[in-house]
Image 1 (tube, helix red, strand yellow):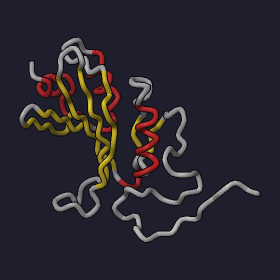
Image 2 (cartoon, one colour; image 1 turned 120 degrees about the horizontal axis):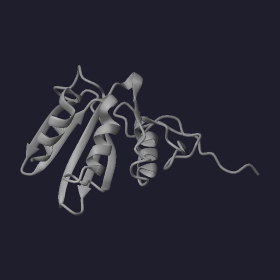
Image 3 (cartoon, rainbow, N blue to C red; image 1 turned 120 degrees about the vertical axis):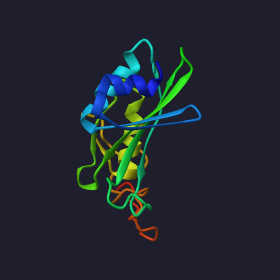
Length: 162
């Protein structure tokens, strides 16, 4: 059974939309279904997405055609070593409620990937074991990969107290 058809059959309306172009499979899921879908993708014998290759976010602020939709998408790139297939799972979140559940219990490597997304985009991961900044220092104000982050903003350089 095709990957996207399998997910649509298993999760129904919790799969918001799917895309399949040249073997590039994408499923957009509801936030409430995210962990169930990811766990199924990892554990189902016909899918076996045993590797979380990447986890990132996209800021769609002022993106043509997306003005009325949720501002952010959190994107999971999955790969199955035994089956040699890939899947992109996306979840859309609003700016004022930019929180998704952590995937660290499923793939421990998600720990640092989620910290990077939090640091750069400001999307939080509920239940994350260590939600500290990863790339910026703790006193840094804002999230520099957001489209509305001022590029000429000057940040204070915080050093050790002498």
